Length: 234
Image (cartoon, helix red, strand yellow):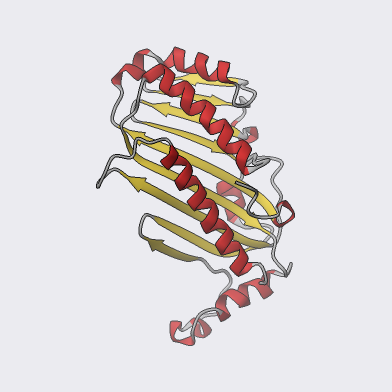
């Protein structure tokens, strides 16, 4: 894989890989081992971990607002969330270290769902919010009656087989920043927002092959790039 969008066009970016699996009740007795194995794997600098009744949370900062990497493990799910994406290869390498540590502790997983979500803000040709908003509006036929209602904002959502995406214009003070990028080093800019979530389930066949996780990750990257390329001239 190589970086799919030039870093100069990316304001903020968050990747989430989630695996849901058949319950591993033994996880409840192995929470400490999970923490120790992930610490040993060193996917990132771990400064804080919490063990609850049914979950383990590991972060790279004790303050949630300043966290860049988070791991959450329960008896039937684990998530790796990162808003510090130096490269798409590095992110996946971190994920593999986490996955290997968890499966070392819990054994093989019967995976029910593989999901990858990418959320980001991107700089486009125009830096004027109204220009970008009007280009979104002009992309739709008049039969949508957009002209009858003076739009201040715009969000388009599309659900397709095994995935969805949302796109819209973004101003510097958009609530999107507070919802998705609470980190203090976020970049607030005028541009576009993209949110895509793609997944695979075991309804038709088993999905335990680890290579399928990378396939879904690669698919989400492809959707993100396709959307950005089509919006880059806005």
